[in-house]
Amino acid sequence: LGAKMVPFAGYAMPVQYPAGILAEHRHCRYEAALFDVSHMGQVALRGADADQALERLLPQDIVGLAPGRQRYAFFTNPQGGILDDLMVSRRADGSLLLVVNAARADHDLAHLVGSIGHLCTVQHLADRALLALQGPKAATALARLNPKAAEMAFMTGADLALAGLDCFVTRSGYTGEDGYEISVAATEAEALARALLRQPEVKPVGLGARDTLRLEAGLCLYGHDID
Image (tube, rainbow, N blue to C red; front, side, top):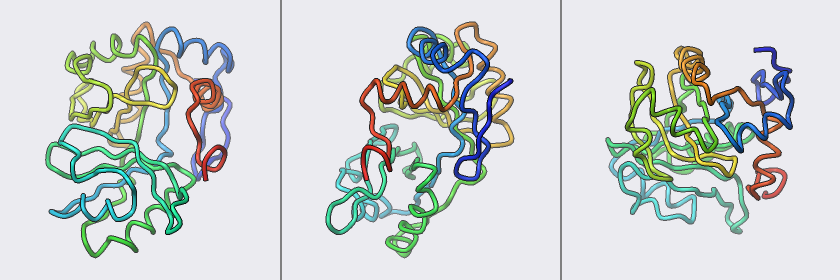
């Protein structure tokens, strides 16, 4: 789509598209912006005691996390310092889905396997992509692909079919706006992205505007504002 690409965490990432960072920033604030955030790490935890095991590594309540709910959390070191921030969702089958930062994904995976791998199954979902649809019109756009998306509350997750593709959708994001993060099979990511870009409210936005948007909203980035 004419993006300026740069290497990051082993991926080729779009910093900006031809419209430029300022226009992309404004589009997210007033319309709906599509981000490819497939560089983020996705990890599944499975097992009867996976939630208790995960609680050993972070200070949030995971045992009390109901199916279909999501929580913002931190991995901490023995002194209570932050190793990474992450999102934790409990899926309908009881398993946990973790989304961790790209630059920390390998470290986080090793931390999980080394610390609680004997208590639950830790699976790196390397075959999953992640798209983020953000902005005040994100719900309107996504509801055309599945009306149930508009019914979701903030920090909830659900298995939804979008453009005929099986996805796990959470109503969350990293821009300060309403929106969604969509986990989809990597082989189907382009088809889903193009289906979203066909919606009149949606334009592609790169990592440059993602950074200005999260700064404006006061959202921290590991390695810069928290460590």
